[in-house]
Image (cartoon, rainbow, N blue to C red):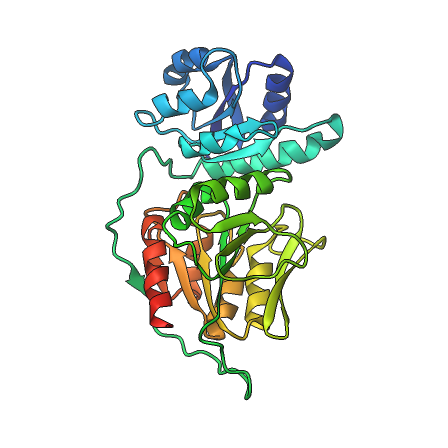
Length: 352
Protein backbone atom coordinates (compact mmCIF):
# COMPACT_ATOMS: atom_id res chain seq x y z
CA UNK A 1 0.00 0.00 0.00
CA UNK A 2 1.52 3.31 -1.11
CA UNK A 3 1.09 6.54 0.83
CA UNK A 4 -0.75 9.45 -0.76
CA UNK A 5 1.46 11.79 -2.75
CA UNK A 6 1.63 15.50 -1.97
CA UNK A 7 -0.21 17.33 -4.75
CA UNK A 8 1.57 20.54 -5.71
CA UNK A 9 0.58 23.48 -7.89
CA UNK A 10 3.29 25.80 -9.25
CA UNK A 11 2.53 29.51 -9.73
CA UNK A 12 5.16 31.49 -11.64
CA UNK A 13 5.02 33.84 -14.64
CA UNK A 14 8.42 32.63 -15.91
CA UNK A 15 8.21 29.58 -18.16
CA UNK A 16 11.87 28.77 -17.38
CA UNK A 17 11.28 28.91 -13.63
CA UNK A 18 8.04 26.90 -13.89
CA UNK A 19 9.72 24.16 -15.89
CA UNK A 20 12.65 24.00 -13.48
CA UNK A 21 10.39 23.73 -10.43
CA UNK A 22 8.01 21.22 -12.01
CA UNK A 23 10.86 19.00 -13.19
CA UNK A 24 12.65 19.17 -9.84
CA UNK A 25 9.60 18.43 -7.67
CA UNK A 26 8.31 15.70 -9.96
CA UNK A 27 11.53 13.76 -9.46
CA UNK A 28 10.56 13.04 -5.83
CA UNK A 29 8.48 9.88 -5.39
CA UNK A 30 6.23 11.48 -2.75
CA UNK A 31 5.34 14.58 -4.80
CA UNK A 32 3.03 14.98 -7.79
CA UNK A 33 2.80 18.31 -9.61
CA UNK A 34 -0.86 18.46 -10.63
CA UNK A 35 -0.80 21.78 -12.48
CA UNK A 36 0.57 25.28 -12.82
CA UNK A 37 -0.60 28.88 -13.17
CA UNK A 38 1.10 31.75 -14.98
CA UNK A 39 -0.14 34.47 -12.58
CA UNK A 40 -2.37 34.94 -9.55
CA UNK A 41 -5.54 35.43 -11.62
CA UNK A 42 -4.87 32.12 -13.34
CA UNK A 43 -4.17 30.55 -9.94
CA UNK A 44 -7.46 31.80 -8.49
CA UNK A 45 -9.35 30.02 -11.28
CA UNK A 46 -7.38 26.78 -11.16
CA UNK A 47 -6.93 26.19 -7.40
CA UNK A 48 -10.56 25.16 -6.73
CA UNK A 49 -10.45 22.74 -9.67
CA UNK A 50 -7.06 21.18 -8.84
CA UNK A 51 -7.37 21.27 -5.03
CA UNK A 52 -3.59 21.18 -4.34
CA UNK A 53 -2.08 20.23 -0.98
CA UNK A 54 0.73 22.80 -1.38
CA UNK A 55 1.33 25.77 -3.68
CA UNK A 56 4.71 27.16 -4.70
CA UNK A 57 4.43 30.83 -5.69
CA UNK A 58 6.65 33.57 -7.01
CA UNK A 59 6.39 36.84 -5.09
CA UNK A 60 6.71 39.29 -7.99
CA UNK A 61 4.37 38.64 -10.94
CA UNK A 62 2.50 40.85 -13.46
CA UNK A 63 -0.92 42.01 -12.27
CA UNK A 64 -1.79 41.11 -8.69
CA UNK A 65 1.33 40.22 -6.69
CA UNK A 66 1.74 37.04 -4.70
CA UNK A 67 1.45 39.09 -1.50
CA UNK A 68 -1.92 40.61 -2.45
CA UNK A 69 -3.13 37.19 -3.53
CA UNK A 70 -2.21 35.66 -0.17
CA UNK A 71 -3.94 38.43 1.78
CA UNK A 72 -7.11 37.97 -0.25
CA UNK A 73 -7.19 34.20 -0.70
CA UNK A 74 -5.70 32.49 2.37
CA UNK A 75 -8.24 33.65 4.97
CA UNK A 76 -10.98 31.77 3.08
CA UNK A 77 -8.82 28.99 1.60
CA UNK A 78 -5.97 28.07 4.00
CA UNK A 79 -3.59 26.19 1.68
CA UNK A 80 0.13 25.97 2.58
CA UNK A 81 2.16 28.24 0.29
CA UNK A 82 5.93 28.08 -0.25
CA UNK A 83 7.37 31.26 -1.75
CA UNK A 84 10.03 30.95 -4.44
CA UNK A 85 11.73 34.32 -4.48
CA UNK A 86 14.85 36.20 -5.46
CA UNK A 87 16.66 38.17 -2.75
CA UNK A 88 13.71 40.42 -2.04
CA UNK A 89 12.53 42.18 1.10
CA UNK A 90 8.90 41.62 0.05
CA UNK A 91 9.22 37.94 0.95
CA UNK A 92 8.70 38.94 4.59
CA UNK A 93 5.47 40.74 3.69
CA UNK A 94 4.32 37.51 2.06
CA UNK A 95 5.21 35.51 5.16
CA UNK A 96 3.26 38.04 7.20
CA UNK A 97 0.31 37.43 4.85
CA UNK A 98 0.33 33.73 5.75
CA UNK A 99 2.87 31.92 3.56
CA UNK A 100 4.46 28.97 5.38
CA UNK A 101 8.07 29.32 4.19
CA UNK A 102 10.28 30.47 1.32
CA UNK A 103 13.14 29.33 -0.88
CA UNK A 104 15.57 31.59 -2.66
CA UNK A 105 15.67 31.21 -6.44
CA UNK A 106 19.09 29.99 -7.64
CA UNK A 107 21.34 32.66 -9.08
CA UNK A 108 22.91 30.19 -11.52
CA UNK A 109 22.68 26.61 -12.78
CA UNK A 110 25.49 25.70 -10.36
CA UNK A 111 23.07 26.04 -7.43
CA UNK A 112 20.19 24.16 -9.06
CA UNK A 113 20.57 20.85 -7.21
CA UNK A 114 20.68 22.54 -3.81
CA UNK A 115 17.61 24.63 -4.72
CA UNK A 116 15.58 21.59 -5.78
CA UNK A 117 16.59 19.67 -2.65
CA UNK A 118 15.61 22.57 -0.37
CA UNK A 119 12.33 23.23 -2.16
CA UNK A 120 11.40 19.55 -2.06
CA UNK A 121 12.04 19.35 1.68
CA UNK A 122 10.00 22.49 2.35
CA UNK A 123 7.08 21.26 0.22
CA UNK A 124 6.96 18.00 2.19
CA UNK A 125 7.08 19.92 5.48
CA UNK A 126 4.42 22.38 4.30
CA UNK A 127 2.04 19.54 3.47
CA UNK A 128 1.68 18.93 7.22
CA UNK A 129 1.90 22.59 8.31
CA UNK A 130 -0.81 24.64 9.97
CA UNK A 131 -1.69 27.67 7.83
CA UNK A 132 -1.90 30.90 9.81
CA UNK A 133 -4.88 32.68 8.23
CA UNK A 134 -5.75 34.70 11.36
CA UNK A 135 -3.69 35.46 14.48
CA UNK A 136 -3.90 32.86 17.24
CA UNK A 137 -5.82 33.90 20.32
CA UNK A 138 -3.61 35.39 23.00
CA UNK A 139 -5.62 33.88 25.81
CA UNK A 140 -4.05 30.42 25.85
CA UNK A 141 -2.74 29.74 29.33
CA UNK A 142 0.90 28.70 29.68
CA UNK A 143 1.41 25.11 30.84
CA UNK A 144 4.08 24.26 33.37
CA UNK A 145 6.38 21.26 33.08
CA UNK A 146 7.58 19.25 36.10
CA UNK A 147 10.45 20.85 38.04
CA UNK A 148 13.89 19.69 36.93
CA UNK A 149 16.69 20.23 39.44
CA UNK A 150 19.54 22.24 38.00
CA UNK A 151 23.17 21.31 38.26
CA UNK A 152 24.87 23.79 40.65
CA UNK A 153 27.56 26.10 39.31
CA UNK A 154 31.09 25.36 40.44
CA UNK A 155 32.30 27.18 43.56
CA UNK A 156 33.22 30.77 42.90
CA UNK A 157 30.98 30.93 39.82
CA UNK A 158 27.73 32.19 41.28
CA UNK A 159 25.43 33.71 38.66
CA UNK A 160 25.35 37.47 38.30
CA UNK A 161 21.75 38.36 39.16
CA UNK A 162 21.89 41.63 37.24
CA UNK A 163 22.92 39.88 34.03
CA UNK A 164 20.73 37.64 31.90
CA UNK A 165 21.26 36.15 28.43
CA UNK A 166 18.45 34.89 26.18
CA UNK A 167 18.67 32.43 23.30
CA UNK A 168 15.81 31.87 20.84
CA UNK A 169 15.61 29.31 18.05
CA UNK A 170 13.02 28.74 15.30
CA UNK A 171 12.56 27.31 11.83
CA UNK A 172 9.47 26.84 9.62
CA UNK A 173 6.91 29.49 10.56
CA UNK A 174 9.43 31.13 12.85
CA UNK A 175 9.94 34.48 11.14
CA UNK A 176 6.48 35.72 12.08
CA UNK A 177 6.24 33.77 15.35
CA UNK A 178 9.52 35.31 16.52
CA UNK A 179 8.25 38.76 15.54
CA UNK A 180 5.13 38.12 17.67
CA UNK A 181 7.46 37.61 20.63
CA UNK A 182 9.94 40.39 19.91
CA UNK A 183 7.42 43.19 19.31
CA UNK A 184 5.97 42.60 22.79
CA UNK A 185 9.33 42.91 24.57
CA UNK A 186 10.72 46.15 26.12
CA UNK A 187 13.60 48.17 24.72
CA UNK A 188 15.92 47.18 27.59
CA UNK A 189 15.56 43.42 27.08
CA UNK A 190 18.63 41.43 28.23
CA UNK A 191 21.17 40.49 25.58
CA UNK A 192 19.56 38.08 23.12
CA UNK A 193 20.66 35.76 20.29
CA UNK A 194 18.22 34.51 17.64
CA UNK A 195 18.79 31.53 15.34
CA UNK A 196 16.28 31.33 12.48
CA UNK A 197 16.92 28.80 9.70
CA UNK A 198 17.16 31.05 6.64
CA UNK A 199 19.05 31.22 3.31
CA UNK A 200 22.11 33.48 2.89
CA UNK A 201 21.22 37.10 2.23
CA UNK A 202 17.94 37.03 4.12
CA UNK A 203 19.17 37.12 7.74
CA UNK A 204 20.33 40.74 7.45
CA UNK A 205 17.02 41.78 5.89
CA UNK A 206 15.16 39.90 8.62
CA UNK A 207 17.22 41.56 11.37
CA UNK A 208 16.59 44.97 9.78
CA UNK A 209 12.86 44.23 9.70
CA UNK A 210 12.81 43.26 13.38
CA UNK A 211 14.80 46.41 14.16
CA UNK A 212 12.13 48.56 12.48
CA UNK A 213 9.19 46.83 14.18
CA UNK A 214 10.56 46.19 17.69
CA UNK A 215 11.64 48.42 20.57
CA UNK A 216 15.11 47.00 21.13
CA UNK A 217 18.05 47.24 18.72
CA UNK A 218 18.15 44.22 16.40
CA UNK A 219 20.86 43.51 13.82
CA UNK A 220 22.62 40.64 12.11
CA UNK A 221 25.41 39.30 14.30
CA UNK A 222 29.07 39.73 13.46
CA UNK A 223 31.91 37.62 14.80
CA UNK A 224 33.10 39.12 18.09
CA UNK A 225 29.91 41.08 18.85
CA UNK A 226 29.40 41.64 22.57
CA UNK A 227 26.01 40.80 24.07
CA UNK A 228 24.43 43.51 26.20
CA UNK A 229 21.08 44.78 27.40
CA UNK A 230 18.86 46.29 24.71
CA UNK A 231 20.48 44.33 21.86
CA UNK A 232 19.19 41.27 19.98
CA UNK A 233 21.49 39.64 17.42
CA UNK A 234 20.32 37.41 14.55
CA UNK A 235 22.73 34.59 13.66
CA UNK A 236 24.01 35.07 10.09
CA UNK A 237 22.99 32.45 7.55
CA UNK A 238 25.53 29.69 6.83
CA UNK A 239 27.64 30.45 9.93
CA UNK A 240 27.53 28.58 13.24
CA UNK A 241 26.86 31.07 16.01
CA UNK A 242 27.96 30.33 19.57
CA UNK A 243 28.25 32.29 22.81
CA UNK A 244 31.78 32.77 24.15
CA UNK A 245 32.65 34.07 27.63
CA UNK A 246 35.58 36.45 28.00
CA UNK A 247 35.95 37.36 31.67
CA UNK A 248 32.62 38.84 32.72
CA UNK A 249 31.63 39.62 29.13
CA UNK A 250 29.86 37.45 26.57
CA UNK A 251 30.57 37.66 22.87
CA UNK A 252 29.52 35.74 19.78
CA UNK A 253 31.56 33.44 17.59
CA UNK A 254 30.10 33.43 14.05
CA UNK A 255 32.25 31.06 12.04
CA UNK A 256 32.02 28.52 9.19
CA UNK A 257 31.81 24.93 10.33
CA UNK A 258 30.05 21.61 10.02
CA UNK A 259 26.28 21.50 10.20
CA UNK A 260 24.86 20.62 13.62
CA UNK A 261 21.53 18.77 13.74
CA UNK A 262 21.41 19.30 9.98
CA UNK A 263 21.66 23.10 10.11
CA UNK A 264 24.09 26.02 9.91
CA UNK A 265 23.35 28.09 11.93
CA UNK A 266 22.00 25.52 14.36
CA UNK A 267 19.83 26.17 17.39
CA UNK A 268 21.54 23.23 19.11
CA UNK A 269 24.96 24.79 18.51
CA UNK A 270 23.80 28.07 20.11
CA UNK A 271 22.02 26.46 23.08
CA UNK A 272 24.83 24.01 23.76
CA UNK A 273 27.37 26.86 23.79
CA UNK A 274 25.18 28.75 26.25
CA UNK A 275 24.96 25.72 28.55
CA UNK A 276 28.77 25.48 28.55
CA UNK A 277 29.84 29.13 28.59
CA UNK A 278 27.19 31.16 30.36
CA UNK A 279 27.64 31.68 34.10
CA UNK A 280 24.85 34.20 34.62
CA UNK A 281 21.10 33.74 34.46
CA UNK A 282 19.88 32.49 31.09
CA UNK A 283 16.66 31.76 29.22
CA UNK A 284 16.15 29.46 26.24
CA UNK A 285 13.15 29.72 23.91
CA UNK A 286 12.33 27.13 21.22
CA UNK A 287 9.68 27.85 18.63
CA UNK A 288 7.90 26.42 15.59
CA UNK A 289 9.93 24.29 13.17
CA UNK A 290 10.32 20.84 11.67
CA UNK A 291 12.75 18.33 13.16
CA UNK A 292 14.56 18.45 16.49
CA UNK A 293 17.21 21.14 16.18
CA UNK A 294 17.52 22.88 19.54
CA UNK A 295 15.90 20.21 21.72
CA UNK A 296 19.10 18.64 23.04
CA UNK A 297 20.75 22.04 23.52
CA UNK A 298 17.73 23.35 25.40
CA UNK A 299 17.83 20.34 27.72
CA UNK A 300 21.52 21.04 28.40
CA UNK A 301 20.59 24.64 29.25
CA UNK A 302 17.81 23.56 31.58
CA UNK A 303 20.13 21.18 33.41
CA UNK A 304 22.43 24.16 34.01
CA UNK A 305 19.60 26.14 35.60
CA UNK A 306 18.14 27.99 32.60
CA UNK A 307 14.49 28.92 32.42
CA UNK A 308 13.17 27.36 29.20
CA UNK A 309 10.06 28.18 27.16
CA UNK A 310 8.56 26.15 24.31
CA UNK A 311 5.93 27.29 21.83
CA UNK A 312 2.71 25.33 22.19
CA UNK A 313 1.15 23.05 19.57
CA UNK A 314 -1.86 25.26 18.90
CA UNK A 315 0.15 28.30 17.78
CA UNK A 316 2.98 26.44 15.98
CA UNK A 317 2.96 26.28 12.19
CA UNK A 318 4.97 23.06 12.57
CA UNK A 319 5.01 21.52 16.06
CA UNK A 320 8.30 19.67 15.60
CA UNK A 321 11.23 21.30 17.38
CA UNK A 322 9.20 22.45 20.41
CA UNK A 323 7.44 19.07 20.56
CA UNK A 324 10.70 17.13 20.77
CA UNK A 325 12.06 19.58 23.38
CA UNK A 326 8.92 19.13 25.47
CA UNK A 327 9.00 15.33 25.15
CA UNK A 328 12.57 15.04 26.45
CA UNK A 329 11.94 17.34 29.42
CA UNK A 330 13.79 20.39 28.11
CA UNK A 331 10.85 22.81 28.50
CA UNK A 332 9.85 24.47 31.78
CA UNK A 333 6.71 26.08 30.36
CA UNK A 334 4.76 26.03 27.09
CA UNK A 335 2.92 29.06 25.72
CA UNK A 336 1.52 30.48 22.48
CA UNK A 337 3.75 32.77 20.45
CA UNK A 338 1.53 35.67 21.59
CA UNK A 339 2.01 34.70 25.25
CA UNK A 340 5.74 33.86 25.27
CA UNK A 341 6.81 37.48 25.73
CA UNK A 342 4.57 37.84 28.78
CA UNK A 343 5.91 34.61 30.28
CA UNK A 344 9.47 35.83 29.69
CA UNK A 345 8.84 39.30 31.17
CA UNK A 346 7.24 37.83 34.30
CA UNK A 347 10.24 35.53 34.78
CA UNK A 348 12.72 38.40 34.32
CA UNK A 349 10.89 40.46 36.95
CA UNK A 350 11.36 37.61 39.44
CA UNK A 351 15.14 37.83 38.94
CA UNK A 352 15.34 41.49 39.99
